[in-house]
Length: 185
Image (cartoon, rainbow, N blue to C red; front, side, top):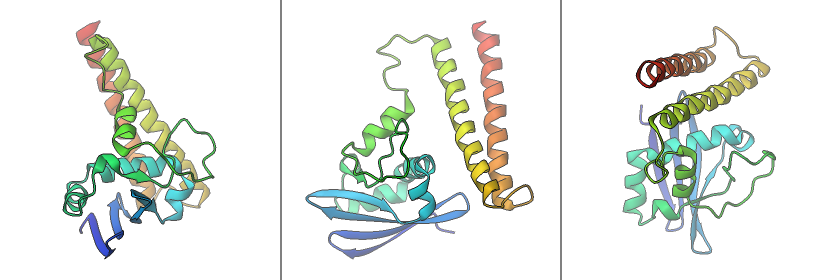
């Protein structure tokens, strides 16, 4: 199965489908007022800013997507989203037009930039990884809660896969903590 496909509708409009997990999401890139904007059509992305952010970040890392942008002369760094993906915003129901570039959001969410400049210790790096695992587990646990509210649960293939992902992050976090304790003390 192809994880990314697109259809050029016009010089200013591209429809896309992106496979994330077991779900295919429909998105659109359009040019308006000299700015390329990506917009998700699926209700699950419009209603769940955290999932939308994760899907978008994964899409931006997709090589086929990057090649399509390059062929269409669209700079990844200038691409905007129609949904504000800032995780610190509390109001998740009101879509807003983001003025921040995709690269700015990716750089901010990764929190790796500046480690060298800040003279961060090895412990700081490991503690950051532990926090990132916590954030991922919280996000996926929220997805599980929503799925449960939508009458999905253990035994449902998608629910079980998300649950396995949470367990994987928990195991990874435990391994990181063990390495941190063994190596750093």
